[in-house]
Image (cartoon, rainbow, N blue to C red; front, side):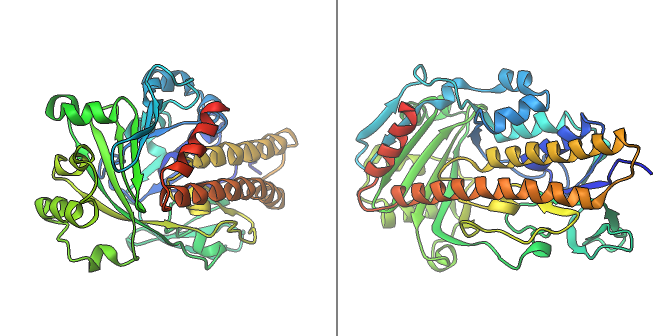
Length: 398
């Protein structure tokens, strides 16, 4: 007769961990299954800004906002927008931003969340193979790629497992599709010491240069590094068909600059030419704008699993944390009601909560996915960065 539902979260990213934290402080246990072997088994990427109405609100509800303020970088809001000649269209200094969307490194945010969740609640190296049909009690099963690990069953399974979500496959046959943009990630370690000219170019925040359906983007990180991103409109198979040996850093840098950035200013070419030799190639995928599914009892999605989009509005992690806050609130309200009435888990009542959560979440996702796609178009159209400048200026004026 317990009113406490058994909950599984697939994925220990910011969204999944935010949900785990919010459940924990409301006396709701959960099990987080994560494919990564450990918290440090792979890079967590660069930096991101947390928005007041989403990421910051979730951290406040989770009791983690004070710690976030110790880690955040207000100067990270500084922003420069240029074209391929280096002409600046926007130059917001580190002293000007209003402090609404401070930056934090992804690795710091993840560790902040990890430290707030009981270690025994997270199972590292548990790769989900599939979600199985509910058992006789209506609980969804989770099967793992390691056949020595038996399937486990839960009242609620939450897919926070990203672009290629195994949980989403239960709710929809829709798969992410290629957005038309591919890129390369470069890094400058100890940039102020090793490459002071790059440090000066990018400044304390972000430096974006767009022209000719291409971009060179630099972002300052809190660890003294700068990450640079080459972004271009390309066919989906460009990374394999272009003939560049991406395992050879010297060849990669030379070929990228000679083929695609030959007429760009030399100071911008240095964002590639002088970078460290660890290079990551990537294709950007997205789900259809307005993607939805038919709600099912005891299973739902959050974050990229629910609304994968490109990074051109900087909202991905914020949306995931907002999703987690809304979902946790819906679950806790039901649990408290069941407790007050001395009732067991009411799966029908929980299903109603999930439908309500999904309706609001998907509405929010569609709005943000539309803005993200509009930004992508503005960044990679012929007159870039003029249209993107107008969009950014409207934000700073609001």
